[in-house]
Length: 421
Image (cartoon, rainbow, N blue to C red; front, side, top):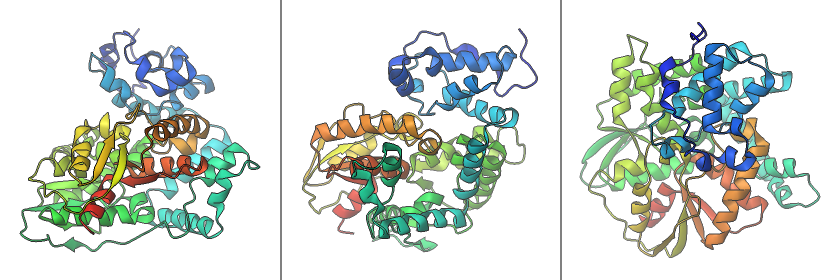
């Protein structure tokens, strides 16, 4: 059957999948639900049928595609090299343009599109979290008298004083001799909620001979918008960042959020139909490096302050599967004196955060979080480390809800502590 004019990806990409099923045991939703339609193989068949006009775009079809985390674990497992991420990200705007969701779902998705890419929106979100912290709402996460869905949401409220906006200056000099000049994506949610991660990133880079530039004109990378099906807005943000970061004389653009890094590394593909931006997009994408990835490519200045701790490491999906950055963070952690590193079971399984997934699909997000927290507890570690603020918020919520006294930190936060910063 010939593809319809409503194509959302190149038709031949569907045939890369040979339906071998080797991806099935690595797909979190398939393992949790056990249904073929909620597996990568089943979803590819569904998307192909939509592409060919053989499937109606009804609530059941949309539901199976919505439940996909976009974690790309199937890409790591696939022997045929299927680029599943391209397929599902192409399907999301196709759905949003042609399917009318129930009212509550439309409102929720519109709020996501409005709040998180906007500096005002993210700071309002941070303000609400601070109010919740003052009211000690996080205590409700451990209350047996509170319904589980409400306990889940209360888990996101931090302890009082835990949030830090910590705004950045536009330039930081290297500590000692300057060896590199880099730019930092400060991020929308990270800058408003996890400012300490940005400060730690700058400190670690400076201790490794980097002059750090933080352009004020930068905007959201567009990942949350694309994940929500708003491709046009994501493309607009990408073009803006290409203009801003592409004009800087830097060796690398440093990212400390896995989803943002995976998104910006895909700018070349996202802009491939844009004659004006595609070459510059590809040039910028080639400079994008996760902070752990970058530190592993330069002569690394190991910290000399001892941190006596038992540590385990969680692989963020878009860092491990999306960017192939796995061993680099572990190498950095082992370089900290006093650290004992224990591997985490299912370390590269999604924690349920997955961009905006924990907002749009809270039930499945909670199931995956409970699985992740169980594995963390089994390690008996003092600290769980990861390279993504979204995972950090999700896992902290799970630890808080279950009353598990394990610190959750970003890789650079532990490194900064070891530098005495």
